[in-house]
Image (cartoon, rainbow, N blue to C red; front, side):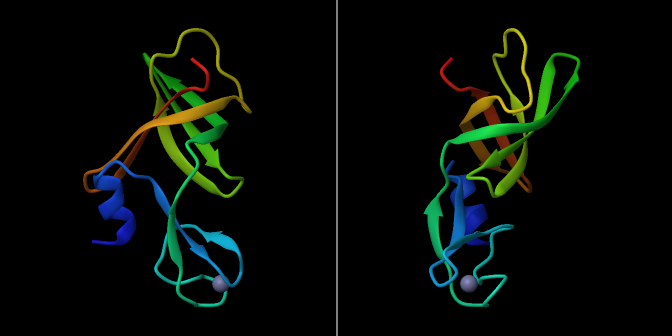
Length: 109
Ligand SMILES: [Zn+2]
């Protein structure tokens, strides 16, 4: 199991970062995808931006972008009212069970 999966299982969303290139390596990997150097793992910001979304019955699924780099699929919970592209959301829960799962709320709510 990768570092990413282990941390996700514990509810921590982490990403690999290359010290040499000074950038996040996504999808997460033990080695930088540019210089192949070793990476450092660090927590990702809890805040993200909605890139796109779709509604299916009572659930809203979205593509969320963290730190202008990382894009993940997730779902929004306790959503009342409208949502739009560019909306600020926060990660409230992440888990890993064969695949990763991200749950968001509108930031500030
Ligand atoms: Zn690098």
